[in-house]
Length: 404
Ligand code: PMP
Image (tube, rainbow, N blue to C red; front, side, top):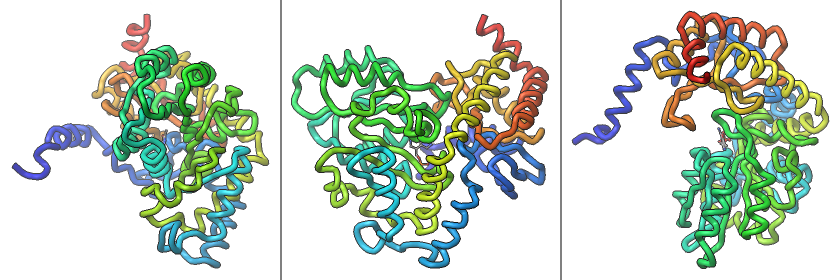
């Protein structure tokens, strides 16, 4: 037996995908000219799968802040937040996040993935109960493994099933932490947070919302789904990332909980890794300010999302339940999903290919993420290409039949 023998099935599946065309897991961007334009394999390409919701990766002020920081403070902190890795910009970022969310405390992590690992494994421990939506992101599942709480899954976006699971727990000892996401990352569906908050109010426990894909996207001021649903008071912890709407990298958690700060000396994914480079902390503070002062970016994003969603739905592609900046089209089978993805790439459209088991209903899908920076012309060009390739590959007709 070799070390990799247990992964042979994956190796073979991976090879079969590569044999069809480009390798979807090794796409190389030769150049990125703007939030929506790049060069892939020498071809000018519309970028439609980058989570760059507000297009802030090229914000001039964020770039200037980043350049200034790298020149003044160097390329890295070379250490953990609890040793030599807390610079003025990390502290400023935490203060600005706490202010933006109207919470007492904010903690910045090096990625959103680590924020979930850290927060989930620290808030609940042995004897506690972690109650997760079944379609939770990998970072939430991994966080649940890093801790020692009992993990209970409830049916995706189903508040009644959540209530049932809590009822079943009865008055068993231990804390209860319910975890949901704002917008789910694969098909862009939104959690029924009002109803979930009502279950929490009735049955007790704490509620954590991962707003990775909804920060900057939902809510009157961009605070996410909790703001949009009017239930911020019921949400005890908000986790988020800087790698999507804020165009950088990093993660955070905000809360009003009085003892929150103790996490800084017990939360291992916070303590035992180097902190964000000063350039990233500085660009993120600026991007947060730019997001707040330009609510029109959110309007533009939501208009673009609707244009793409409506266009794909009208052509007969199966998309998520409602328009959101994540617009997914389910493919009839893996073969055609891969062919469709390759066809789009060759025609100059980049989006994400998602294959089971990473998809919610075990069917392959093409996942687009729209940006405020897309123009109407780009979205219309994408729709035209999508329709032509979909028809040529026989993807649209079978889907129409499946739906009928
Ligand atoms: N939570 C969710 C719901 C996500 O989709 C992601 C990233 N795709 C993360 C957390 C992790 O974010 P990061 O890229 O900052 O590690």
